[in-house]
Length: 285
Image 1 (tube, rainbow, N blue to C red):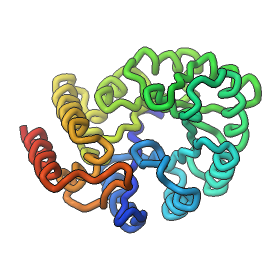
Image 2: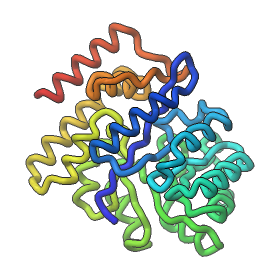
Image 3: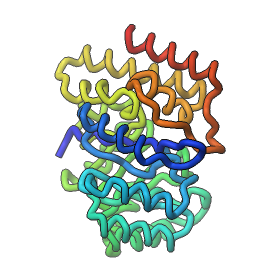
Image 4: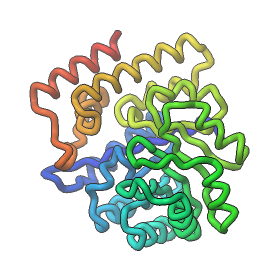
């Protein structure tokens, strides 16, 4: 299945506590604007700051949407990761996902293979490949060794700034293996090069633009939409992208999704105003 648009949905916090009501409102809006599913508990969700019970509460609060959820279960504690994998299995989510143990950047590849064999033996698993954040670049050959040794890796979210890297997974595994693009500035590429879709943080604040790119057959129009997305992401990085996501949802979607959790601090009031004005100018331009 192609042209899938998944949102690495942000986690709304109010006074550093998860607000599940705001989360549900946000999710409903994303689905109403063409987003197909959720990538839950990834980096945009501020997953490393969530406790075990908080991550359980997120998946439980969306149990009626389980078939539209890829549940990111990775952590630095394999026992907890396996517990999350079982929670995902019990919830019958579309799949689970796991990033590598990101703190341990110099561990040998065969440790990573054992890690993913254990996780994917519980439930079909996507690898969340984000070398810039984790220090590990999971290659098709690594995935092949995992699956040849009894693992069940069924896809990858490839947050790498190289479309050829994404296509290498398709070349190795074929259409039965799902490949998602992670970088926001490669949405148009993902729509055109034959991979399955995107998991992009900008779906949180411009789901309409993401949907429009995948619907369009006009290259000039697609490029115009992509340039708006890229401009928004570049501006957000100036302020701190993880915090800016919350401001951009309010500015461009018109409702409050709370704030990030410290140590990802909310933007100051003047910063929020400046970012909102920039964002609206980009959308109207």
